[in-house]
Image (cartoon, rainbow, N blue to C red):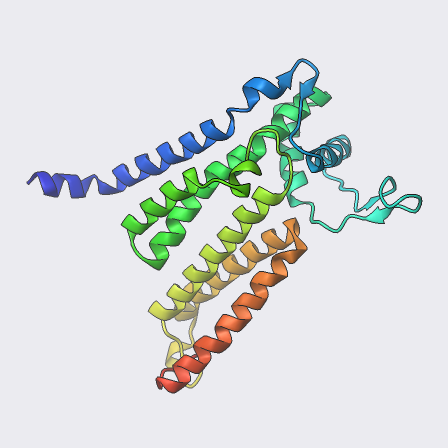
Length: 253
């Protein structure tokens, strides 16, 4: 009976654990704030975050405009900005939303975005692992992404205002959306040879799932042009899966 009751509340327990992992992630990433926040602003970590801050200040002042060309790089002619605007636009939108206008205020808001994205990685990782395996694997993966160290942890710290953590987040979201689209297509098989399966009701779920995967890819591309690597991986996987289906006498429609 106790086991039955526990199973009844299992979804709420899982949600609680995921929220706890996300809050712990946010807390650990925010620890540097105690030492690098001053009255003058935030002593940002590294060099690139200072350039990102400059982009944010420009965008906040001209919101939602974004400068695709920077006259102060590649002296004396300037150069285009090769990375996408999504990370900068997210920070700028938050600054506008909370009313951050001075440099110290903008620096504090910008510095919290990487920890928030790291916290968002927890539920995304859980969902991805759950899609591939089960909820137990999802919880283990969520716990691991919370404590993983190295460059991932450093680049998601408070004060590291750069697009690397956004690359990880939106790249993972795309992988999740792509796998979800594949599973939907597998659960609702279609055949181009049969008109019975080609109707609005049967097409609705696969088309919607595929569209969401496309939007997820586009968001990743708006953050980093190297998102094209994911497209190459998907293309390679599609070819391998087609060959496997062919030799196993399964349809690939």
